[in-house]
Length: 620
Image 1: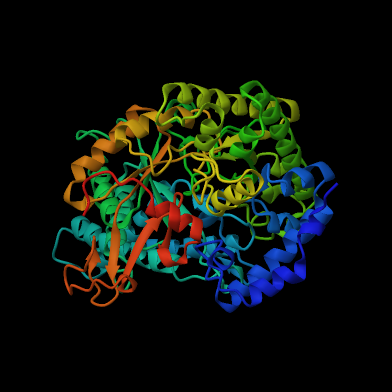
Image 2: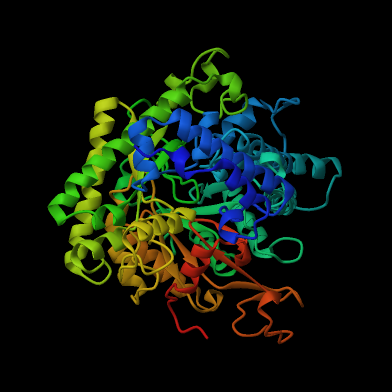
């Protein structure tokens, strides 16, 4: 049997890292500066950790299918640490109880300024405990009490000054200013804090939009306005990823109390690419929704990860997250199947191996104790973890997390099987839905069998889109429609280069959202300045909602001239200083559910993919 050790020479890998200008190698993660000292150290550590995990932690069958390219174990380098992927932080609870970062105790804040400063510290402290991102699922509900505390302080201040004005009105005016300052500071902190040895800013997301109180509405309004303002030189903030929760009766119609915030969110998206949109009324989200219990409201991790149903406790995103995920290379399986019937057998086989690998990793994670993750478990970030003794193992709390199987390249797999992908053929769409439905059924069966939350993920392919393609092409050569690009299409998306109407694209991808309970996203790529047509954005959001999209976002042109500072859409030249030098233009675009700063940080596969995306609208 071929072993990974035979094909992986650690010293050769180190040599390549040390002297490399290979963008695909040093910029595998676009949110890490791979050329920096900490980025370089991280790459050395990652490479050696992967080697150890493969040789010492994977069972022989899993190792074989991994090295042969049929499955991809995400964040394999972090396997050795026993970390989990992500968590929805219970911000309100943590602020109210206070918390200890390991360097001192933080008591409950008494103003919105201090509350949002502590929210930044919570994000930064927890980032080093997990290998994925962190989110806060009810940002508006959780911070509204601190807006009100600020208002009360301002009322008392005005009374002490014996102010000759309507004290209540003036107090709210002062509070509104402070909330904006707090939001602006939070956004600046989000893009300047360091984590993981200084190589990366914390990967953070916030969800909001359903709080109809004066305080909650004020917070959301100012978060959107501060996002529009941008950073110190007008740069588009990369973090936090922001997700606006869309709900009938709250913010979707002109008569709804939060409709003005929905419109403001569209204006902000047009200028800054955030927020994205999660749809509470999608049936697979609505079934858990209880209006009076924000913990039951859907929230995402930003990139697309969804955690909600729970066979081991309350069905809620709050205090829960993904434990790990492993993706299946659908095009490779399709190419090696002699017909569709053979494909089903192979798919079944690799799903079971992927689930077995997730279970092995879960067992490894469960052997850890709270002392290994003092903030995540010791400060009650993870659900029920505060009840653990420092020497307890983690199985009883980790079982509330999710174990996810994902997939890449449904479109290319369909071409390999029947000659067309689901964007161009109803027959292919029907087969695509059969494939993903079968995968979901398998996840549900594993959930029942193991009493663990096995879920199906529409994988955010990122670097894996290129890796899977290269491994498949190495085995099977260049095949038209399958391996003739530099990437495989993310999950079940319609291929980015395929000419398709935006509404038709939404309708094609929507049915897959109901099947992928671990997370999904649908994008609409726009060619023109969306700020000139907010009504069009609203039309697209409504189309997503009506067609059953769970989570959606827009990729709009967001550019900045480095020569004169102009912010806006830049086509061939800057409209202010007329520079046409491409290196003088910073172009912010989206990879998955998040932004990555300038596109010069992208690896080759993702740059190639972006350049081939079909843009809806005329453009220039």
